[in-house]
Image (cartoon, rainbow, N blue to C red):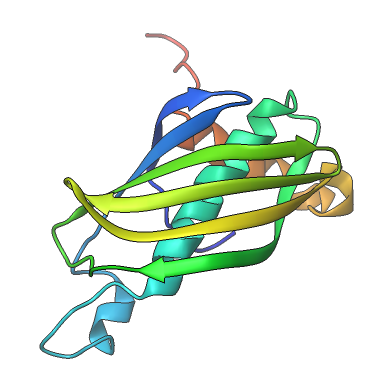
Length: 156
């Protein structure tokens, strides 16, 4: 995955819910065109951040055996904007988890102001059916980074 819309998971309760954060930076390319003079984070980026948070939650909830592939977004609502300098908070909760499907609902907010909400349906698949062998270690490193797990440096 090249586009990360999640910086870190700050709360994780496997099988229940998770909270993630994303710092919105003016340096992000989409602000060049969305919208000049009135920078607004595109809603699709907010939804993807919620989906990425839900995907990590589901992956951890099934003991890392399966990968969550988003198949639908339902009831998406956009209530306000996120702008450069804001910190997005993504709260997601599992509504159902019946392998190979799962449903997650999520809300994105800035401070105490809700900016978006949606329900996501995922299909849970074995990693080898979705991620090529050559990219699997990189994908796992991304998950570990989101969870704040870094390898120890030898010699320290």
